[in-house]
Structures are given as C-alpha cells and as structure tokens.
Length: 292
Length: 287
Image: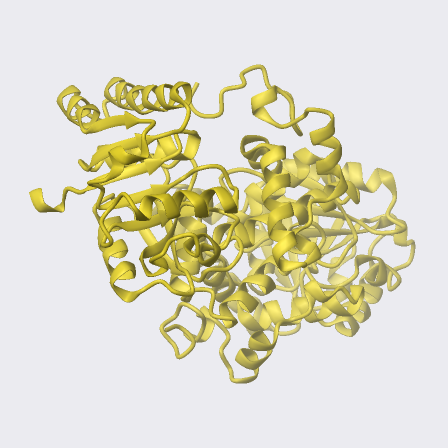
C-alpha cells in the first residue's frame, strides 16, 4: 500500500478544488492545495479540515483517521512548491488561457512523468493540454460536486493523450474509492451532456404551461425515480451555474437544446439563483446547500 | 364511496395493474375482454402480482383474496351498463380504441366518465369517438401500475373542468398522486423523457462511451435509479420506437424522431428485456 501513496497537487481552492483535495487526503495521498490567493487558500484548507471534523462527528471516520488525513494536507501559493508532485489536478477557474498558462508554467517545475489532470467541466481537454509542452500527459478527470460524496469520475483523453498517461490515471483513480467511466473529449462528457438539455427541456415545459414546478418535480420523481425533480436540482446547482454551463456547451455544439431558455436569464437577472440566494424556483429559509 | 362500480376495457399488463389498484380501494371492477382465455390470463397475472405482495409482506393473504373477488371478467359490452366510470386500456391502435369507445359510450350512462390509459395517442382525438366528449379524459398509469406513485390526468381539448376535479379525487382515493397535464404527445413525463432517451441512443451510436459506462455515469452522477439504456431495455425498444414515431408525427419536432440506431435495432428484432436483446442485456449491441 505504501508505494501507492502519491504526491498530489490540487490547483484552485474553490468548491471543486477543496472537494478534490479532500478526496486525495482521505485516500492517504500527500496533498498540496495551491491557490494564487492566500485568503482563498486558507478558506479551502479550512473547508477540507472541516469536512474531516464533520465526518468524525457523523461517525464516518475515527478521529485518528481524520487527524491522519489532515496531516497529509498542506497548502501553498507558490507553484514551485509543487515540484515533487506525481499528479497535478487542475480545478481552477473555467478559463482556457489561464488553464493552459498554468500547465505551461508547471512544465518547467515538475518531472516530465508527472500526470496533469484537468477537472474542467465545459472546456476541451485537448485545448487545455495544448498549454503543456507534453500534451500526452494531460488527461481529463471530471469529478462531480460535492466531490467527497459523489462516487463518479469521468475520464476523457485529449487528442494527444498518451496510453501511459491514460493507464496511470485509471490506476490512480482506483486509489480514490471512485468509480471511473471512460468517455470522449466532447463538451459536457456524459453527465452534463445529458443533464443540460434535460434541464432545459423541463424549464421549457414549465414555461409552456405543461405543468407547474411542483407537478413537474413530482411527476419526474414519481414516474422516473429521480432523487430530485429538475427544479429542485436546478436550485441546488444554481441558476447562474446552469446558465454558464449551458451557454458554454451551446457555444461549442451550436445545438439549440443546450441553450438556456429565456426564463433562466430572467431568474439570473432577478438574482433568484437558487438555494444560495434563498430563492430560485422555490423559496428557502436555509441557504446552505448540503447538510442541515 | 362514490363510483363503486368501475368498468375496465382490456386485461393485459396495464389492465391487470389498474384492476388491482381499483379493487384495493374497495371498488368492484368489471373487466371487458374479447375471450375467456384473455380473462383467465389477466386473472393469473393479477394473482401472481398479488402473491408477490403477500410474499413480501405488503398485503395479507386474506386481502389478496378480497381484491381478486372484486374483479370480474365480462365478454359483452352490454355487461358494462350500470358502471359509474370506464377506463380503457386496450392495445395502442387508434381504430380499435375508437370503435370500442364508441360502443361503450352508447351502453353506459351519458354522463359516465370515460377515460383512456393511452400513452402515445391523442386523447382529444379519441374523445371524438364518444357521445358527449366533455366526459372524456386521459388517465395515464405508469407500469407497473400498482407500484408507481403518480397518475397523469390528461385534460383533452373538450374535457369538462368538473371531470378533472372528479378525477383528482378519484386518483387520490386509489392512493396515487394526480398530476394534471395537457394533451401533448407523451403528456408530461414521456414528453420530457422521449427526447432525452433519443439523445442518449444517438450519443451512444456516436461512441460517447460504452452502454454500461453511460448508465453508470447517470446513476452515480445524477442519482437516478436506472441508467437511460437499461431503462430503454425495460420499456422495450419497440415501444419506444412506436411512441417516438407517433410523437414525431404529431409535432414534426426532430428531437422526438427515432434515431437511426433505434430503427435498426427494432428492425433486427432487438426489443430489450422482453426478448433478451437490448443495450444492456449482453446481446450484440453491448460491447
């Protein structure tokens, strides 16, 4: 087991980055969380440590396990501290040039056998890989939010990903307790590829008067066995996030099913972004997304 | 309880499930079929489903007997005189449905509600076959009817408002959640589901991932109880093909059009779980 432990760097201490860092630390990998901003970094580190504390309270981890996981976690704002990394997981802002530039700078810092993983959800793995002098080492690994709780990772090779990187990535992902599915470097991979048009069609049906938000949510849950209706889910995802993801996928696919319906624009304009603002399709007293 | 005696047309899978639900609510059900063998087959199906419930401890043996005792097969349309509500659940053939509905409407009282369990045909169109179409609406159960929580109440163009209210109470009285929907191809649930399933079939055909990985991604990524391709195998590829062809014909919306792979699978006899050949059944299609 000891030689399975890797030096893992996670870039970006936002929601996804801190979630992925949690996954890495919990799996026992030596985890370095990086963010350019010291405040963001500290908030991210606190999020990871907080997750382990809550896991102990809930009886999911012993306090020894939580302490061990916390000990593997470190943070930095200096890219040079990532030099010994075996795996770098990029979870920074969804900006192609920023992601490319970051991989390009890392080329000069880490070993040429270091794996570069991108957690992009809407950009091309191939495009991001083009920022590295060794695009063959870049693999798309898309985690679901919240990363510590969701089992799925979508793996997508870029156009120039090499077989060794693909295989090493598959092997690495098995150490995380996740289930990996292999897909292609196409906009939205599998889950968002199907979710975005589905959500849009539900919003369009609502706007067309085919049902109310309550009746559509109840029908989808009752007849299809989904854990949440489409509007309950959109309120958790955030209407602004749905708008961004849908628009980015539409820009690449030019398929109108991906374009967010006008109701989304109105809701975003009104600030009704979902649970996080206390109002989306439904009203909420508690703006926390997960837990109580 | 209002509406104590219910007429049911057709004793296939859906008819048997609906008969069970109504009998469970304490009502008597007269099921019309074309031959005694079909009545016997329906009773066997009903009995099997109930004994499954007994085995799982959901109902008692005595309840099961009482429920069966409330379901009576009949062979003549005239035997339905005196029922207080009619539910049609015969094969999805518009000519057959209309001919039968027309006969039934002349036998039962002029104000007796007549409902269709069609999933793919226009309720408004079927309503033209009965006298007084204001008493006609859709009552769409999902399969298996005894287990699925919701029932769609389809308001056709000429359906009386009062009938919709009556049906909301009726659906609640059989322990289901009523969802009032418009008369659109697929109503609400299948209107949303058909383009989604078509999209998955097309993406699979384009090599997005293996059938298994697509299902795993949707189960784990979205928490659905079933992935889309295993759901298609369960629904039946022929049933999905028929429903999408019908919906496309009614809308000319390409998102409803059956994708080429679906057409080929059905043409080659790949129908899903019912014949062991589908996306996830280990047949040729699955990698």
